[in-house]
Picture 1 (cartoon, rainbow, N blue to C red):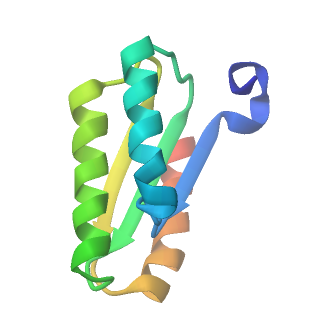
Picture 2 (picture 1 turned 180 degrees about the vertical axis):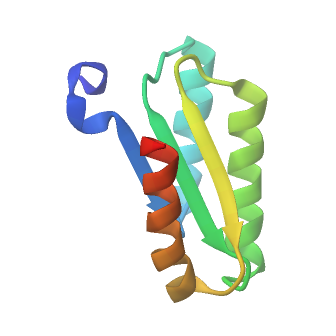
Picture 3 (picture 1 turned 135 degrees about the vertical axis):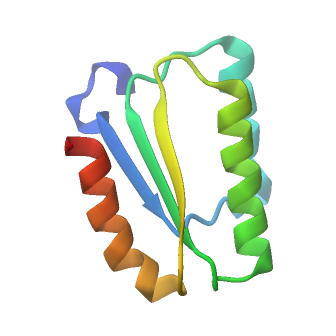
Length: 102
């Protein structure tokens, strides 16, 4: 159970492929919202602005859903970086750690 596991206190996902598995993460988020599930952790999402239109569009859609649903217990940050995929990795991990521990 992720709620009882200290491993799941902070999660970072950089350049997430949110459409993987036929948009499964969107369906999972919707189900968690419908069930009123508490997610007691911090989530950091980051993507590079040059990673492509579809990458950025799905990122925006997922961030908008998180904002609209405001799942109980979930604290999150969604951030876009200047540059592409490799640039976002370095900056993203630094920013994620700052978000988690500052």
